Structures are given as C-alpha cells and as structure tokens.
Image (cartoon, rainbow, N blue to C red; front, top):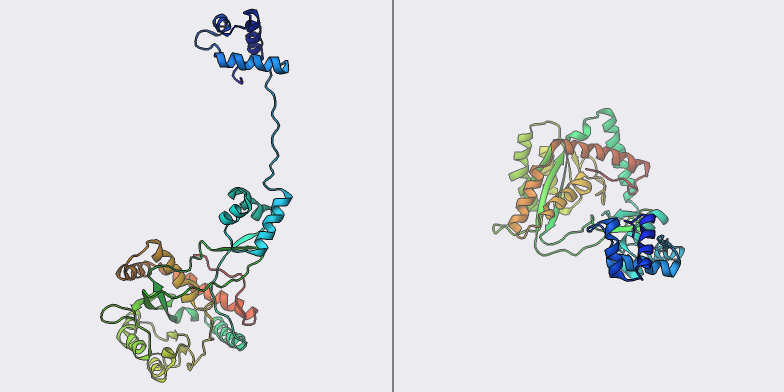
Length: 361
C-alpha cells in the first residue's frame, strides 16, 4: 500500500463502508476519485480494509528487523575452534560444515578473528650445518655487491625443473588461515608424463629453455654426460651471443653438476668464477629461497603455462618456450634486485629461512 497517501487510504476505507462493504460497488465508486486506470484493485481494497478491521489503522505496520545472528558469539567461537583444528579448510567447505553462509564465514575470519589467508610457499628443510654455509655465502655476496653494485648482474644462475603434463601445486588456490604464517610445505608425487627443463637466469634475461630428452622427445634423467653435453653443445654458444666478459656461473650441488669432469669443463669457461660445490665460492645446499630460478622463474613460468592447460608434451614444451621468450628483460633486473634483498634478509636471520619475504611480479 506504499503507493497511496494517508488521505487516499482513509477515503478508500470510508467509501467501502458507505457501499455496504461491497467490493464491486466500492471499486465503481472510487473511479470518480482515482480515475479508471489508477483506481485500487479489489485485492488492494480488501487488504487495506482487513488491516483497518484488525488494527484500527490504515498505516503500514512496522515489521521488526530480525537481528543478524550470523556473526554471533557462538558462531565466532565455532569458527575459531574449526580453524584451530583444521586451518587449511577452504571458506566454502568450512561454511558448509558449520551451516553458515559463505559471506558470513568470510567476515568472521577476517573482521572478527582478524585472520589472513596465506599462500603455500615451497622450500627445503635446512640441516644444522646449512645455516653457517648460507651465512658465509651471503656475506661474500654482499661484500662483492658493496664493492661493485653491478656484481650480481654478472651472475648466471642455473637449474633444472620438471614440468608435469597434468597437475602441479596450485598455490594460488591453496590457503591456510591463521594469525601468523604457518610456513607449511606441500608434497606432491611425481607424474610420469613430464619434461625436464634447464635454464640460466641473469639480469639480462633467460638462457634457455633446454630440454633433456632422447631422440623420441621423451624426458631423460640428467646425468653427468648429458649435463656436459648441454654445456658444450648449447650453453657455450649462448654465452658467445651474450658477449660479456667476467661472468660468474652458479649451480647447485647435484652430482651431475659437480662431477670432476664437469667442474673441469666449467673452469675452462669460467676461470675462478664458479659458484658451486668444489667451485671458487661454495653454493649453500637447500637454498632454493636464494636462487632466482626457484623463488621466481619456475613458479612464474608454471603459472602461465598451466593457465592454457596444455594437453600434450609437445604443447607443454611450446608453452614453456613462449612464456620464457616473452619474459620482460626489466623484470629480470627486478628479480636480481630481489636476490640482493634476500641475501640481506638471510644475513640478518643468521642463515635461517627468509621470514615473510615475497617477490611480487
């Protein structure tokens, strides 16, 4: 009845009474006041008169607003207990378990419990002796950076990675709710269909990708012979194209990397400038948080590659090449700057894991 004024409502009731409470006569009589097209319907007249008989008034009855009980103390406590018991449950599943709406659950988590959704960050567990080796490396790195701010721009970081055809750790959709970062590690089994990729990364861009595969295009294990074949048949030619003197080369301590023949080969191309086990400067083990390929490149490439959902090994390799070739060179410079920042954080942490340091693209 919101469309009728108070005076019009009183007129409708009076007209209905004068016409013996006959709806047909009332509607006909109201034409003189409202017109044929604007007169109230039979249902409107009946509803208004019934309200007058029931309440003695033609005014709208104010309905009481039901208090919002979704974010009650009981529900907040229930959500808090649920998070404590299982912090990795999604908002949707948690709201279904507690019979709350998705929006209410989200508001309780963020506004009432002041929790944050942390992404899973992958890292390796440090052994007791690793802290000292990490301190030694970052001290050496930062001393050279202080003497020459372009020192880090002349380091080629290298590594291999496996790209599985179906599936990867979806860190974007994985969240763990809590009032502090739990630093959880997620393990995933290897998938038989995959490619093995090698890349070199430096401030000037990415060298690669190079795929370790046989004549049929199937992925093969990286051993010493295959690694040295990659160096001489592929990497040396890429170095010649760069044309920069006094470059340093970094690699991890995998056996195929540090075999005697491999190290001799590297020293011929990088005399006195190898960062590796058995090199001029040791690379600390289990330090994926310090190498740009692990803390940036592989995650960046996988995120973009899997967004297109490649269905074959050939398509997977094409996507990897496309993403790496399209990587902006200025982004590589930012990654190396972030490497220096990480070295400083690692030194301040006395070789421990890097707490709350995230690289934003």
